[in-house]
Image 1 (spheres, rainbow, N blue to C red):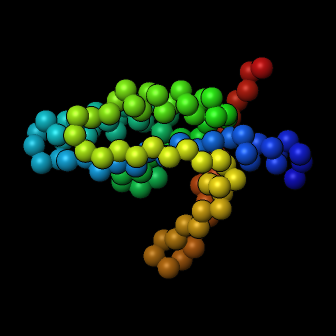
Image 2 (spheres, rainbow, N blue to C red):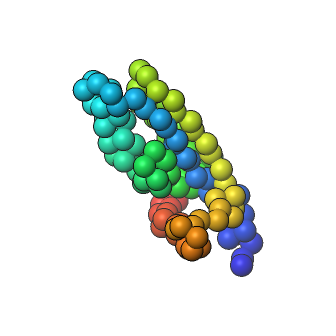
Length: 113
């Protein structure tokens, strides 16, 4: 592993949005759906039903996406936003039932400058 790869493990950030939104009324379901769609439009991918993740090339970029999520917050429900390094994300153990599964590969990041 090169020095750049090791540094990127601490520079690259993952933003996790965890939420529990009410879906009892038509308006609440509409808010839930709108929140999910806007997360996906901003580049988040579904990790589990109420957990969405997004890989960001830097802390500054992660802050931009966190601000966007804060603007999308629905009027009711609980939303958590967690930001962790790629190194921390990579240490997560994932299981399907009792079988371990491979971690989600890091998406390809394009750098123009």
